[in-house]
Image (cartoon, rainbow, N blue to C red):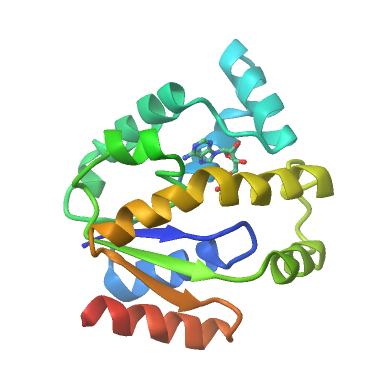
Length: 178
Ligand code: AMP
């Protein structure tokens, strides 16, 4: 099973991704996590990524594709994975075509997402209010076409992300097994 999780920041993708990883015995991979690790590198690309992530902008498609596709070639992802944060633009989805079995779109309102993120205790450098607003705005303009792309392929199902963690998890598992 190659499962993609889509939703705005604060929708609960990483929480669900980790739960699903245990339930389905599949590795969980987050493109945001890969990039955050790379921002620690004292290289030109590390510095560039740090600036990009802290601003809330997206990493350019060519670089994203190069990095994430190289990750997915590793043997541990051969039999399936749970992917969070990629593809996030139409060019990324097209370049990655055919690789996904199902897409869970975890829906929460912008207001609920902002409320959740502002209540988190684990502060992250790229989680300033300005960067979060930018990321949510980019979701609507740049990632919603990806939602439509997978919907048209009949791979997408929607889950109400404003329910309890357990209920969201239950709904995703049920939709996968249908
Ligand atoms: P996330 O943890 O998914 O919110 O990702 C954190 C940041 O990593 C984003 O704000 C982007 O700067 C970058 N990023 C993650 N995934 C992608 C992607 N598929 N395309 C472009 N940038 C990405």
